[in-house]
Image (cartoon, rainbow, N blue to C red; front, side, top):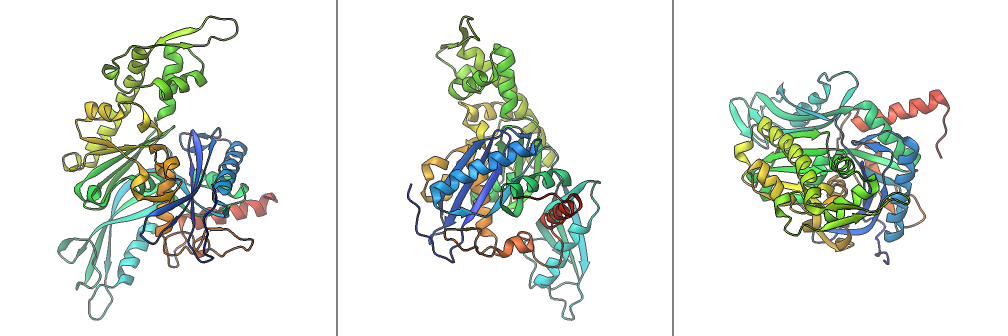
Length: 441
């Protein structure tokens, strides 16, 4: 594909989805109508990640390089800075309330007051070895008046805020950062993957009405509950598409690569929906006869595991307290959503109306057909969230000169004197290099 003409001051963002089964790099920009033009896509097989956590640095670095190189080839853009997704079973969330007393003489709430309350949330104590990734405001209370979305300009002497706080293991983030840097890239910010996916597949109407996003990846299933345009609950279930492949491998007594092909080509999440009980022949290992597998039996194996995952999802929805407020139901995305009859399986287990989430609604031109699949929801969402960051001027370049990225210098979408999560990771990484003398090309 021929690369589009790029203005020197045009904002270009690269989303890097480091998943358990694949690593995906997506290059995009926003057009004059607010839609996303996909300039390039790169994908590589991921061998160094398990359940969203890096377990092999060298393999992950190589996969990142391959994905980015393919994206550069398609787009004609030299990728330098990326917005990286973070997930894994180490991610936790909690609700916290903050209170400040206004010191303005006229007792009018200003943006500085809101920022001060927001920054205070980063000072709360977390478990050892964890750091705060995101602080997401939900609603505010000015004196006795509750349920305020934007308190700026209101009068009051005390401002309270309810916040959804997401934490993650520092070591997990450090390893992701190390892999990206060793691949020759800079990290603009780390973004929780369910937030990125929600930006790609959920509509503003769904977020207002009440919706649960279920992102079924290779190693984990990520959940995000929205209501009244506010994120209410996030969770990570340590099961995904890979465990389905393992079930097929053991249940059908086939090799793992054959199990993955069976899942992709013939798999169904609902056995009763399989009307034609086709017999599938799998080549046997070395001089052994081919193994015959019934499509309906394959579907029963898949349905059993998918029902278990959906029961965990339903438990998280009930735990959030918003089970009866999901007017827009459930939106399923991620690679696991590409299974046949996945929508019916989710509805069967949860009893909640469901649809499959595709990122195509936000896309205008470019490689739309290539990325309009559930498996690319996170990567597309990382591009969308990167473009929404006001600090970014450019995160890639099409010419030989290097552009300056203020976002990389300030550590992401947060402003002010606070040392952000990504700043802490960078500081740790730089100090490690100083202490070990390690050199990164």
